[in-house]
Image (cartoon, protein in one colour):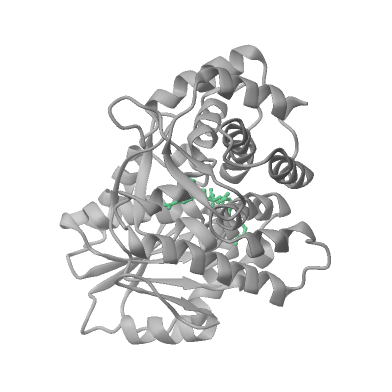
Length: 355
Ligand code: NAD
């Protein structure tokens, strides 16, 4: 897979990627390497990564607890303390080896430690490969509110090695798929159509789909790093998706929802809103709803859940001057940003999702 050029860094793949890392991680450039892992990537991914990494620089490992519940400022404080105790300096480099939780929090820790040190993302989940590791958004949750604290700063490089996916559960794979579906829906109808028949997918097909998704995300972010315009299109499904994710995180009696699972529901709901605003046709809406519902388990929402999720929208970090902002579809493969919606339509979108 050919290297992709992002604004100020390269997205490198497999063997070429490890060669690029060997060139980058030289003692004349960096004093120490810190690899951030979680308890799972420590076991499943670190041995493969270290076996392929060629460097003379001292390596220290910082291991975190896994999961969204740990993507917070307390965990970040732990990283800053470890970096300090292990004598990290301004010439240290941090490598984030993990899913989106690790790339988000590791990136944030790197951007803030000693006013910013270099970091490299090595995504190990499908979701992090096609989305979270690309584009320079780093941050943590504030309580259950998603990504409220953060910074936009690009990594030094991203290394994508699909080998890591061999140990990822099918549920986590499906979670990542949601962001790939989104890339098709907002930007490329032909790419969306590829997901209509996912049976008999071999490794080459998957690698091709991953590569295309990264290209789409990178094309969008490269034009608008700080999200003043086109980058907002990547928020399709995320206004309601993030509120749903937050609601499930804060309710211990609810089953846990993965990020992509929440976004998948958010995409159905926001497609419904797009239809109600005459931005997509009824048949396009049904096509989206049926495909997504065929891939993800249906979740039950009662009236109280729906109201509480709507109440959470006020905390969405995309809101401007108190107005809740949506990125809605304008046909499949195209997006219209800076849209609003009445609560009545949002409630109807949940009712329709249920049926
Ligand atoms: P995650 O990082 O929690 O990883 C999911 C689970 O898989 C974890 O338990 C992890 O330990 C495990 N795991 C990781 N790699 C593995 C492997 N190769 N084999 C076996 N297990 C493995 O979650 P995620 O879905 O990767 O990322 C979700 C996060 O990404 C959310 O916090 C979301 O907000 C964030 N995100 C950020 C951006 C961005 O632009 N910064 C974009 C999308 C999502």
